Length: 133
Image (cartoon, rainbow, N blue to C red; front, side, top):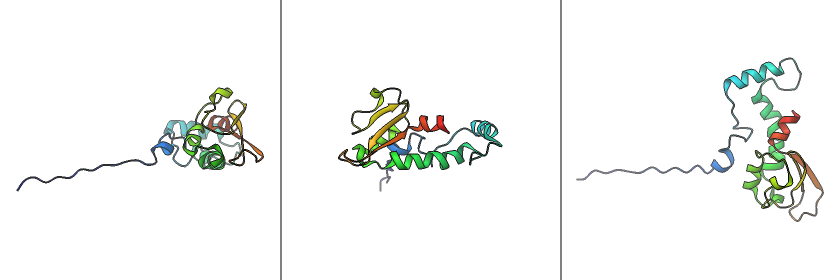
């Protein structure tokens, strides 16, 4: 008899959306940053005491509402990566995302319907939400 063997192949189907470390429920920061952040918000009554809590209480609802599943954008995967991109001008909005309009730094609007006939909704990217937090 000869030697027998096997091969193992893996594929991370979540790499495109979760691999960026900007999705709130998988977002991690270094322990030193977490500690510094906690000290900076101590006693401020913000509704969170750590960066991790802020990610879940503030970032997660915004991400889920505007970026996670946004069929009106025409490209759900691109919309998910757009969440983490800086938006300083209209040219920073990917042309493959349908119906998005630049409003201000890290702020854009989009139609509430795929045919762009619905009311406009205004949203902020990750950087915009963090600046406002």
